[in-house]
Length: 461
Image 1 (tube, rainbow, N blue to C red):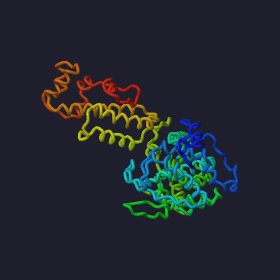
Image 2: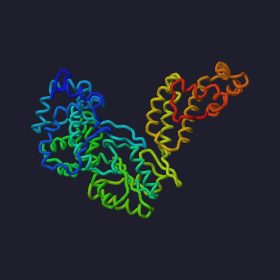
Image 3: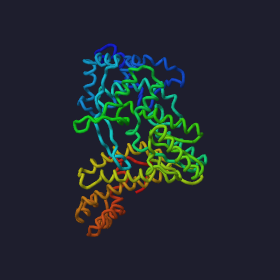
Image 4: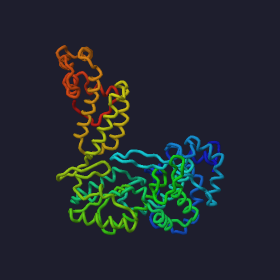
């Protein structure tokens, strides 16, 4: 299991794949095994398949590419290769003999976009490597057995595809959505139910024991190990696949009932024709989840309503004969809050420095929300961002005399410079940021020259 670059076996595997290695977690697994091709007996030696050099090379590449923070043992990602070169064979032997013991995950809390705290569990680097190797083998075998209406954490599937499928349902006349949100799903997955599902697909007891050991590894909090009887810690490579397996029974039940639905991880939308039908579906599916999977529907976040009034993966839909994708109001509000944080006066920094931070955020945001079909919203947001920047400039000038001099230096006439300076008074900064003199002194081209990205191709103000 040595992974030094000098090791010919590993080096040949890695060099052949290079940058073209498939992104198993992300989206590109070209050869999926058709459903029901293999029998349970064919999984008796799955551990040997997991430990094949090619699979391990692929896992190593993926983990190194992902980077990430250290786990409880403090090992950094750039120390992984050296560790495997020294102790890789020992780890391999422990896995083959079913004696490997994962370390607890490190607890990390992050804020959810819609409020609240999401609890992550960061595995040690070595455990991430092993989980990735297991994931690659299981995903090849399992993915083709999952529902076509499931889009989360699967090869060749994305959030945009899920939103597009939802749009097709709404356009077909299914005018009511049953928006189901599972309460603390990743924290409440029942281990026994999950392991029973895994055992129906895997005969190799060593792999079963390894997966169970990851589920029971526990979490370190303030130096104390806290055991976990339920839940799949978010943060490990294997967790998304296990969550899909857990919810596959929900998908199959919805298909059995011939319902139109889209699921992305624990976010599930079911589309029906009437409010009454939606309420029946919400009630019956809530009961199904509670009895079959021991999962609870979050009543505060789940609802039956018009697709235009609900959000799905940050998007919503317009009303009318032509259904178009639009950015959900909550997503727009989140965008504005982030821009306000980045342009806050207390942050300081020069205008180019502020725009550099804005650019990084806006490009990532646009890469996702640019999928909307309402460009006028993007145009308004673009104007709003430029106005925020003009407001910063105007405030920093402070004195009317300074404002007058700077506006003159930007090429404005005496009359327009006086108007932009507030006619000798301070004036409301937000109002003055939209004044014609400020727009003339700092046009679109000025902000583009500093690297501010365009949310739309053509925008005014």
